[in-house]
Image (tube, rainbow, N blue to C red):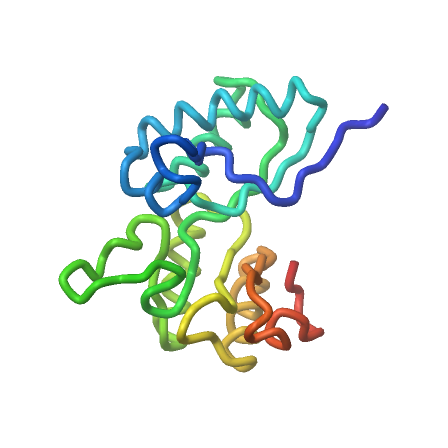
Amino acid sequence: MPGLFDAHTHMCLNVNPQRDAANFYVTTLLDPTGYRAIQGVANARAMLNAGFTIIRDIRNGGNYADSDLRRAIEEGIVPGPTMQNADRIIAPFGAQFQLQHEKPNLGNPEYVYADTQDELRKAIRENIRFGATLIKVVVDDQPYIYSEEDLRFIVEEATEAGLRVAAHCWTEKRGSQCHRGGGSYD
């Protein structure tokens, strides 16, 4: 049998239901990047043993642990499937977390907030510089969402660098934004 593909994984994120009440937000606050990288190594080995030969990790890996995991797999340091990865998720300010004015940085390092085209360009370039092989953006599930023009800009910037874009679509409340055609959205 040929190897299996998984197009939506989070290798460096293990939610602990007893500790975190199945809330990945709590997990991202409590587990440091080094620990999450070790979880990623164990998860990569488990995925390979389960028959997955290619995976697409679409973030939630602490401070670039997913890029480090991909590199370690490519260099043969740890066993794992061939891996594409997104680094920090690009989102309008606040992203998917319910931020407080006293703690506006609670989304770091999971997210990079980008609201203008200059900020979007910088976020894409930063992700590429630190090891992303695809770009992930949040397009719903929050008070502010990107316009169609913003999404086209993101796709154009990523495409110029040879990368594809994955879009997080979660809720139905803004439905049409998740189902528009065009571009190279995954």
